[in-house]
Amino acid sequence: MMFVAKKKLIVCFKPGTKRSRCMSMHKEMKAELVKEIKEIGIHVVFVQDNELKTCFKKYDSSKAVQFVEEDHLIQVEPILDRGDLSSRVKIEGAAVSTNDPLLERQWGLANISAERAWELVGTSRVSAKIAILDTGVNRNHEDLRGKVIHQANFSNSSTVEDIHGHGTHVAGIAAAITNNGKGIAGMSYNAADILNIKVLGDSGGGMLSDVAEGIIHAANQGADVINMSLGTSRSDETLRRAVNYAYNRNIFLVGAAGNSGSNTRHYPAAYQNVMAVAATNQDNDLASFSTYGSWVEVAAPGQDILSTFPEDSGEPMSGYRVSSGTSQAAPFISGLAGLIKAANPALTHRDIRAAIQRAATRSVSGGSIRYGRIDAGTAIQLALNTPSSQQPPTEELEELPPVWLNI
Image (cartoon, rainbow, N blue to C red):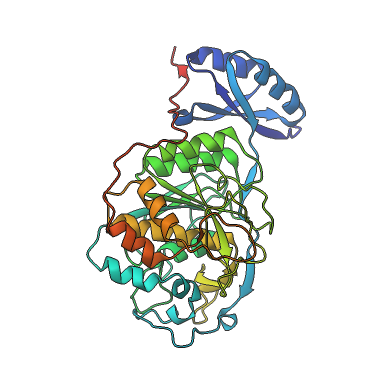
């Protein structure tokens, strides 16, 4: 039997279109329905590779179709790896308030006054839920064990566990167990749990439809924060709708701005309802690799960041690695957002965003950032003194119910 290469299209039918009409069109195109994402009203279909352009045009020209897009690859930015712990110089004179042995090597927490934030919040708090949309999370890591309260796999991998390592590194920055006498401290201290939403495969890439489905799943699971250290240079309606679905459910979304070293927009970070995060170095300047621009809201530590990594040897501390990228900067914001939510659960996603923006410093040299570098201590202080706005979102509010009828 001859192998026929296939590609996926994403088709959104207009509201009120009968399901029988949708299925009839798929049959006409010889398209195989892979899945439906009903919350945003789309069908994902397989078509033969040599028929992709023809099918795209036919769907696009149909009066029943609202839009059609190719289901393309979204991936993590290349890991800018600086290797083992020997590359991480200790912070001289650092005030260490927890018993995590590697805290003195976490310059990022020191530079954004994380310990002041922890002191302001104290130990009496509820747990926020941070969804990590990535390559998976190593839930049995010594510094993450017990933190992962939900898992889902939308990638092409056979396992929800993290084989690649990117997701585990991101998760540790945001929410590693703190003051446990092991490894590192997480930005959210012990105020957040993790939803492991695997949307990227073991090589670090995943499909647009899988990422969109992961965002929606995280929203439906009650996430307070969604971290997206991934992206593409393409703006897609499917991804925008998924972001808006979560935003309309009072979820704070965070995206890595990208590692282009330019002002090129990177999605989903560049969408209006996502906080785009650039990366800074230990001198609080913009990292040379970081994307920047007026569309990027804030900057956070992202160069030579120490965090958790899947253990690959029996050597001491083999489960930790130093890496760089806006992928590492974004979870500092996600962890801070989780800490804010735990400190003042009544705050909306808009309140959280405003606190982080208002607390940011204006001085980040090397490229334009709208609000500047984050200050966790000031953000927590503002959040604790802020009554909830209790206002519904005002940006990109469209609700997107299923658009077909079961007839």
